[in-house]
Image (cartoon, rainbow, N blue to C red; front, side, top):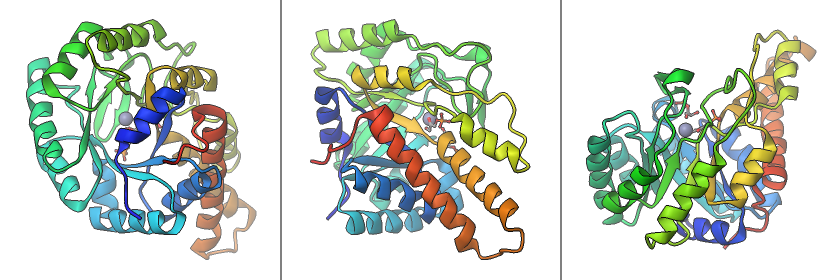
Length: 315
Ligand code: G3H
Ligand code: 13P
Ligand code: ZN
């Protein structure tokens, strides 16, 4: 039993018109909640770790817990670096045993993004690790970087093809209207599916057959979780996410990986707030963390069956 790469996962997802969920992990309860949902539905999964998660939990602790999840569940799990900021962080994750890394040079000048991505692709490929990169700018907050709604730029299709050709990157995260965090839209949700279609066609016509596209900032911001947070003392106002129908549509197209973190944070916070409010005398962390783990499991089950379509996707 070992971690797997995303290569075959994406090939199957593309042909099967579904997507693999990529969930951010920061601790044991999140890992257990996610993988136990995937085991129930025989679904492959990507567990991803941001720079802040590496700092919070330590790469080795995360790697060993994910190894335990592989051994315990027997499901296909890829361990991925999310929004890798530089070569050093990608190298650290490759040395730790991650099966894929993302280098996020989306904030850089185009030529610099190409050069840095290529350097990481060459290093990773020589070690059997696959690479995701990003082109275009999503609005929202990721790590310490905040991009205002007006400063987001959608991915240019010609540039996307040039980028894939010149870097040899294995999958590409694109900007078509999603954004990071809990406050994605002020008005109506809107994704540029025509742009996704054009990018896909350009890649296909140029010989990049079944090229996997990645959607970041794809939490739906479940209003029930937000309401529970607020009912039990939270102050989360105006939070809005990507409607599930749009994610279903993206999954049926070239999008093979859908990133969700905010939904897990909300489910976890709602469960913990509720536990504290309902039993103020309790102080055993296993009580409230156990409740959070159960709710994360329920959330991921719903994602697999209602949004991603990844049930029975094991190799
Ligand atoms: O896109 C960012 C992810 O939600 C990770 O967030 O950097 O706070 O761990 P984080
Ligand atoms: P959300 O903030 O929509 O959950 O997006 C997470 C993400 O893209 C992680 O890379
Ligand atoms: Zn992201």
